[in-house]
Image (tube, rainbow, N blue to C red):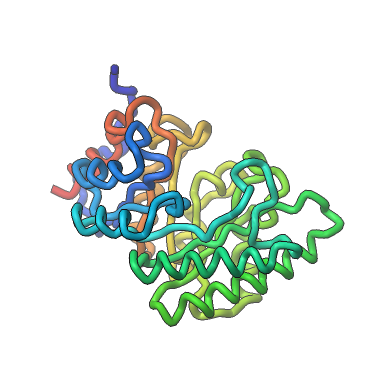
Length: 279
């Protein structure tokens, strides 16, 4: 297959602090079964991976792959029920409080064995705007429960804003909302997950958020916009974005969570260019 043309993102020879890149195995290497994607990511140069929802695989199978390949699993999500199929999700729906507790208990089992750095709780949607306040209250309670449950395991809890074009009705969809919620919660183990694609879709500049609030960020993810493809397929200035991350003081993981245009290996020009700059 012909390699997708991607513009050169890095044109100078300066050396910057290292960015810790992780490969999102729910989006990358999908040419392979999930368990085979660990080795594919390692062979491509990644030392860490993340998975949106790992629960289709057993804990033992995932642990074996981590041990076999030596990569880290740095992030996954609490189950979100029907969110990816057009539903409201799990974490904010008042009638699903007990189901959220069960999902969190499942996450704890996976956390104990797989030892991620952070766990993401997706806020979800509200289909009926008149109930939004109830949904936000429920999400607050559930997010605090998750943080209180995971903190003794050495794991921070993150939450993210999702754009309302891809997911209409998503209850948290801007950087300002995330910061406001973080201040309200005032929990030492709750941090932001900054997805540069979603913020860009809402016409926000993620660099400003990263630069000003790096200490409040627990995880970063990226994809180009429009299209949610790899860097170089859209309009985002990834040289500026990566420079901002390097210089911000943020030291967590930065996840490649995009839909490759073509084969995954053919989408990694951005990674090859970045690593070349460090040589």
